[in-house]
Length: 190
Image (cartoon, rainbow, N blue to C red; front, side):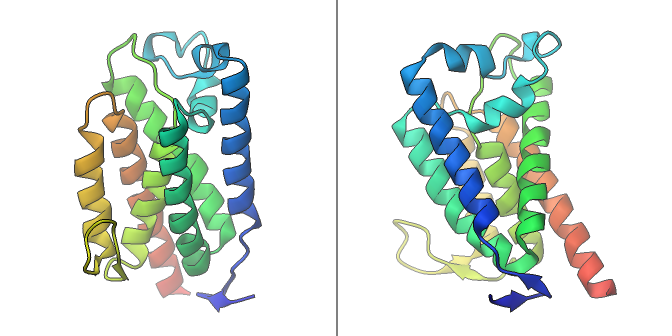
């Protein structure tokens, strides 16, 4: 296994996250009521608190799941490489929960949200805090750019499209930046 910052580069947790998201997407195709029952509706969160967690594993269509899982794979590999798979799991879950709580606080009360985007923006935010200058390619832009520019630019481009839960993206991004900053500080102090 490759070592970086003293952590093992174990991708099993990433594969589990991808697998659970894909399996639950297939379940929601077979049973359309799953999204209505387990999606996040701000006005109903007191009666259905589990939706703060379950919504981050459901997706509203093939393009939604595909875009999120491809992004999670690439961001997840990088975060596991830089900080370890344990940090990846913490960032995914804490960032996803923070993103969904931001959605509850900032979105229209009767709207519904599903998707891993808040968790994925948290993974991206952690990467920005840990390796902001790493050069990345973003399709369809043909030149490498700093990771921080790709993540922040992606946030503004994607988050403000109609029907997108920008609140979850924002909450996840902020949580990821904070966790990444704590990890970076703890690594420097060690």
